[in-house]
Length: 83
Figure 1 (spheres, rainbow, N blue to C red):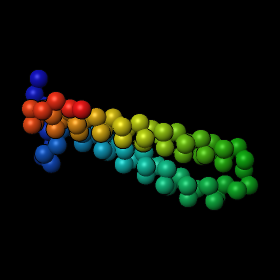
Figure 2: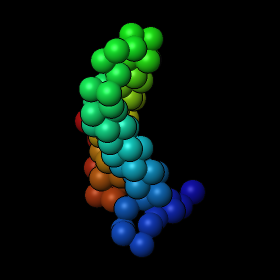
Figure 3: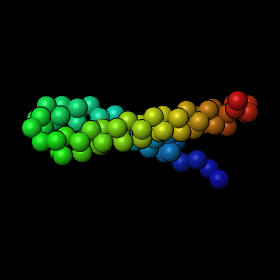
């Protein structure tokens, strides 16, 4: 099966993973700023803290999946097995 690619030269899957990683990290960064606004409401602050931690975990998992995807793509284009 042929791998679909973006006009950028990377596969759609790689592009999608990079986008997911970026947006997860962006959510963490943005939400960190919101914590200052929630000093007086413990329930809302706890929710945002859980949201931040969830996005951090998603970003880390996405990073690992992206590394594997990039290694697989490299092996496919060079004909060398990935390690």
